[in-house]
Image (cartoon, rainbow, N blue to C red; front, top):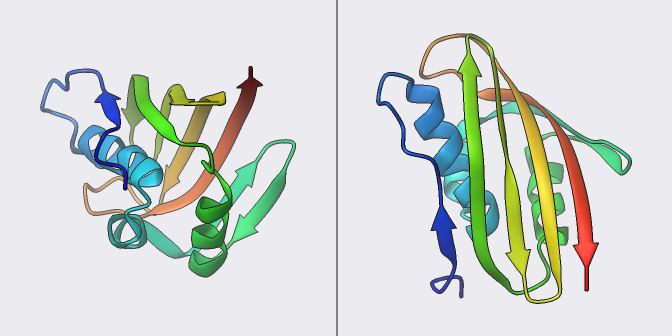
Length: 130
């Protein structure tokens, strides 16, 4: 279904495990890899999509993923992933056949360890249709 998606991510310096987690997480959003998504979010996840809605809980999170990215996606471009302690961010662009979604996600984890789950996401998503 999504095997023809081009994925471009920045090279990781290798000393920030959360960068790898967030790279995989953002790719999983596009591929709708629910197993990886569920493994990396807390049970009480909160996802605030600015200007849209606030999603709470794993099941609502998965429902929202199904609503997003309905266009045929051809490319995911992640510009940067920044991590520090409990907080991280990623921004980039999802390219579809009829629209581009520019995004910035701010993540808060349950802790600073590399096994911490994502507890809160604040997303700024701008759709550009053509």
